[in-house]
Image 1 (tube, helix red, strand yellow):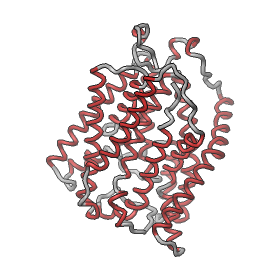
Image 2 (image 1 turned 60 degrees about the vertical axis):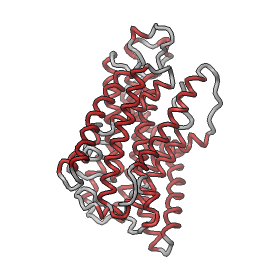
Image 3 (image 1 turned 180 degrees about the horizontal axis):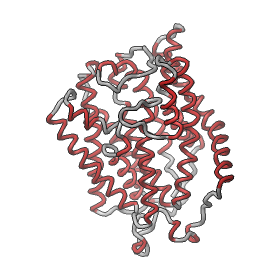
Image 4 (image 1 turned 30 degrees about the horizontal axis):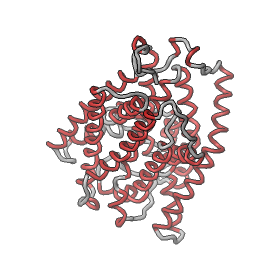
Length: 413
């Protein structure tokens, strides 16, 4: 199948905008209500948007949507690549944008941040190398915590590919069970404690500081894999049950985090934890419907998606990496210059979209080309071969074990 469904690009862009509005119009001022160490901000907009709180407080659920899409896209990549191809493809996709955006963020922090410059050096190095900061360290920008979860998932997929035995189904089942157990325990803790209790905060820690363990978010990646499998063949009853489990597990994680917000931030105390769950569920349902449509239309040529949709998808990654520190710094500068708060956030988002288009269209390709030249200088790059000529050891993750590929109606992705 194609490397991605056309729907995924605008959906990913919409999720990024939701996260951006959450950080710029809500979290930039509402975080002070939390009163928990580790939630400080280095650059804040210092602009209040209380009237927008009911519409922006749940924008963080865009991250959960990202993870489902990532599970879908990575499953597709892993099913059509050798381990070397997969690893190279991920590096070429992730590192150029991180290097550009982390450097821009670092410069903004040096110019406008409230802390000493020495505090930003180690987080900058961690960001450039995409090394998780650890529980007690500091992120260059708090949005980078999601990269820890993403890289952990990539590493898990890569290790599975090296075994030559684990299939997409095995990986999806493992993540489904692993994450469902933890989220069930978290929900139980939620029913017995309050946000000020240590057990509550310890479990909440696995959302951000310990994201690389995939305990809370493994279900979202698993759901993406299941949806990818459903786009290629009919799911069995047991697999449909697995999807139900991942959906319940994901809803539990969202409910857990939303409840923490609602009980800790007075400005949204009258809101419902069901709102972010419904937003996430609508996105998942949309992906599932398109995946089902793709399976039903297998063998028929589908029209090419408009180029601008793909461009939206490419803009999403740098937009996510720059909107928080750089975006709020722009808002603060505009407000200090006399702009009203609403106009400032609109202009800031518009400027970021244009800058991120330039990054993905001009800067990233140049950095990626230089990286490929460097890699080719030190060693031969893996070459993609047609599936019919690819040796068994070079096959990617499959929907079924090798012995099952000959069964009628069961084609590998």
